[in-house]
Length: 141
Image 1 (tube, rainbow, N blue to C red):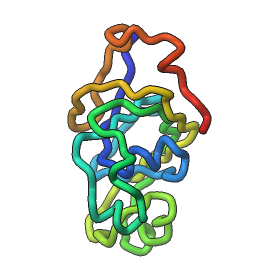
Image 2 (cartoon, rainbow, N blue to C red):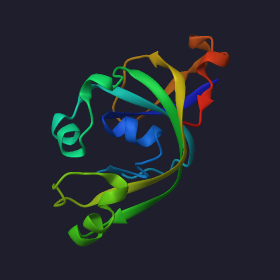
Image 3 (spheres, one colour):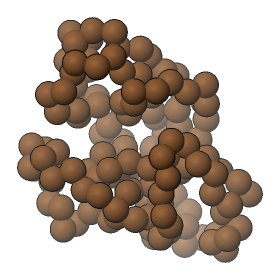
Image 4 (cartoon, rainbow, N blue to C red):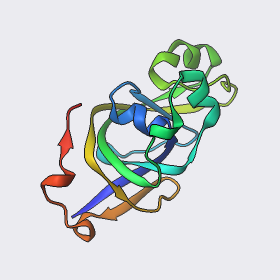
C-alpha cells in the first residue's frame, strides 16, 4: 500500500501527531486532501523547542511518527491573518512571506516510529516495505 508522507522538522512533527498543531504552514499550495504520514526530519528547530519549552532529547527524528488528515488549505496573504492563527501553527516571528496553511485534523501518533529518510514536499512511502502489523497501528494519545 502506497501512502503520502510529509516531512516536518521537530518539534512541529510532534505537535501535529499530538493534535496541538492544526495548521501546517508551507510556501507552496497543494490539492491533496486526505490522510498522510507524518515524518519527523533529522533536523530539530532548536529555536522553536526553546520558545515552546519542548525537551529536544525526547523528540524522535528521522522516522515516520504518526499520521494525520489534511481537510483543507487556506491562503495567508497578510501578516495579521498569520498572527491571528499563531496558536494553531506555532510559527515563530517570520510572518513576512505569504503562506499556505494546510488544515490538519484526526492526528494520531504511532506506537513505534518507522525509521526512514525524508524528502521535500509530499513523497510516497510503500508501507509493505515495513511489514506493517499491530505494532505500527495508531494510538490516540
